[in-house]
Length: 111
Image (cartoon, rainbow, N blue to C red):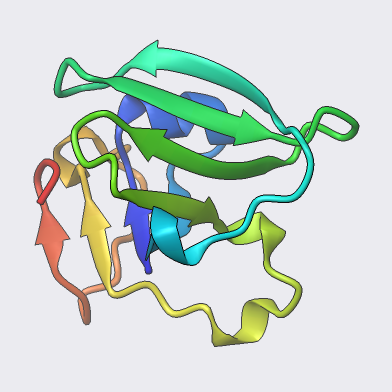
């Protein structure tokens, strides 16, 4: 579970960061056909963001850099109470007014 402060996550979430749960692609079962939007990420690889075609809710993100994993976006969880970020990444791109949780690690770029 993480918060990503990269510029692409800021744009795609409409917020200062995007929160998600990193899982193995092989452990997921995607039902339906979400819409996608691909962008070149901060590291140069293509990142594909999937979202609901009906309401626009961000669903998950996959990247070329680590294709065996994906990040399921926080808003898709039925129960938000158990979500506890364990790391903040791309803090070098964090907005200066964002209050980072000092109890978890901060990584300037992608781990």
